[in-house]
Image 1: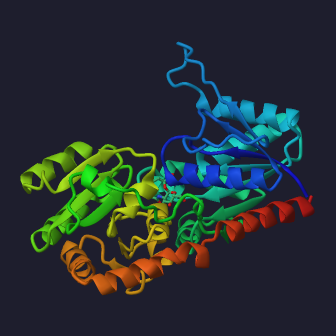
Image 2: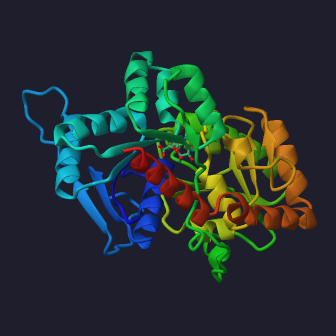
Length: 376
Ligand code: GMT
């Protein structure tokens, strides 16, 4: 059955937007008509396809309002697209505000469009500092026709913290396996001033506090005191100034490369030997999967959904939050032993195809759509 599907996500850099966009692209290739409804073109939506449409939400700055009414503008746009494009499904990423907007948009449209909500984690982490939103999150989840979460850990946390009267189906994330592969770019290491015998450690994030980039730099300083290595810091965000200060304090200016936001991550992964993902919150850890697909084993913290991606001692290692000594010891175990590193790299590379294959995950979402429409 070919469907008309609306997708709403945050268009900015971030795993939820990436997953929503990749899902939309794959569904379009399967013949569904995909209508992205968002404030901007999602940042990875670079592949235009005849089945993909973009509907921009514009929020007017009216001086009487203290805050621009984004949520109302989004709900109105949803209602317009639901009616005009005869949407069967509106698939929103995040309960707040998107599921709540979808419920309002559906009411405004007067149709029976079905709402599917995917939880990515921030709904839950927001509760950590703003419990007043708990009822809104619960409402968004309960009034959705189906709810999915990107990891078992997130589904369990949502049940515990929000206690919604709604079941949550786990559908893991996936990556575009046509893009995330090991590629051989001649001279790329040299272009960054990295010699062939140096090992390359990579960290990719939006540099929010929860990413604990300080721990990454501290663990790397311990690694670099034992072997010749470089650290690629990819991304940007609120912690950047603090991290620059730490790198200077630890006299690591020559060893740490600040690359900012980058587009062709597969190239950077392909020159990397090891990834560090030492977050205190991470419902899934999409970058770990991207890196693994390119043959980069990952050392991650034993929190949230990370253990559902990294198999400890097989394709990476898990360490306790904040234990940078253990991170450095495990990193050195791999980086000082090429045979072990190559084995972990091969084992990491097969993870996406074995457990997170795009074909399988996209089919799981299609099953959700069909089941919810079947119960019309
Ligand atoms: O991690 C972030 O800061 C971005 C956030 C987002 O909204 O894109 O990522 C969340 O969703 C990703 C895709 O499902 C997950 O891979 C990330 O683990 C999750 N981040 C957190 O839970 C902190």
